[in-house]
Length: 348
Image (tube, rainbow, N blue to C red; front, side, top):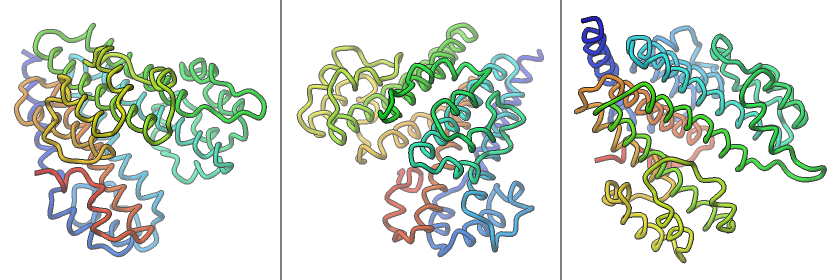
């Protein structure tokens, strides 16, 4: 009885929260803003972000502070929703935390490679300190790869990252570290699905994360092959496990001579057939494809865990769009160019 009641609560709450999402008009009005301060004021007074922004002075808020607060809302909403889902919510809450932790590791690594590790402190999400196993302030004080490993002490990430310690005078292998950390998080996710779910719930979750994995691998192949001209062995080493792409599909993609050939080959795969009508660039394909799947699941699935995760991932896409708007306005990019980078406003 309790389980059935919990299921109904999760379904109702997730869909009600989704009902407060930004819509096309919100994006159009955000694109009309002329400064980060105007964006902050609009989000504070006109959207569901008002509560988390209620204590700010939008006239002088820093871009980094605004983005941290927006991420805090997304994280807290996700955590609250997971608490309602009594069957596997706690497990997926840990998965969401791990995704956030990996994101912070990679952010600090970018700053270290750029020679300005202290810049991380300006975007450090202090709200994660209550949950994370990582010493986040230490990530802002690293001056070397060994400092990074020290900041990751007592976490499973230290062992993973230590395998990529660079030789003297050699650059940090950012792509391999990112891939290894993503594999760790994804393996935890699929372990939860395999061990804690069953029936149609499991099938739908495997489909969701399988499509996510396939799209990530496809866009990785495109980026590394055509932008960075990496060899097939290295590209293969960075790909995520799981998913529905067979080895023969991957080999065909690695052998493609052009982007058009790769896209045509991908559209012959199970995942590719689902998104062949998306007429977008490779840069937007990942979020557009995921948005297609999650929007369908949150509307029509009757399985609480599927709806819960669909909401969480849809809000991450919304946050990605808002961040693109903030960054575009900050660098005075024309609004039409910013709009072309967004997912939701361009979706039919």
